Length: 260
Image (tube, rainbow, N blue to C red; front, top):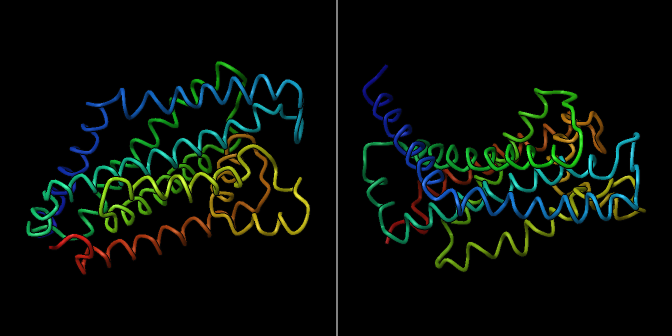
């Protein structure tokens, strides 16, 4: 292993470890609130509303149908918020300048922060899934699909959060995207319903929503059903990872929003 690669590996472990320790240190802010929020969703939508709806598709109860979507929703939100707040905090404290002048590559910085964001997203997702088991029975139809779907979904929104943090000039800028972009896309992404129930042209418009593919890929992994082709879902998710990753690296290379 070359000296440069060895130095980058040390830097990568350091950034990732710092991010994970940060998540654990403030667990009452990073892990508990989303679990409480999703528990309320299970109670209100799953039990109260779901009991009136009955089965929705392929014999699954309504709460069983929405659990994968709610788990993915929690993973998306927490991956995004973790990296956007953490990296913007580094910008605000000007500690990001130390990383930029340190002997580490841009990909090391990006991957280190993404690992921390994905770790938080997956931790919250596991906790939410455990809570869901208190309300309904769930199996795992395709374990590999379920794991890779949540990993790709978390990575996509971690990269999106990183780009948002680069451009953000104040803390309020971080909250704009979750409120005006992620929330609408999530609620229109098939979390609470099957897009096959939508009439034209709304079903066709829904196919332009990337969250639809993430939710359905994970739903296929858990329940074995999906509104879209799982292969197409993987193509969409991998394409977003590649494009957002390239954009993030380009912005780091140019120092956009980082160098004063």
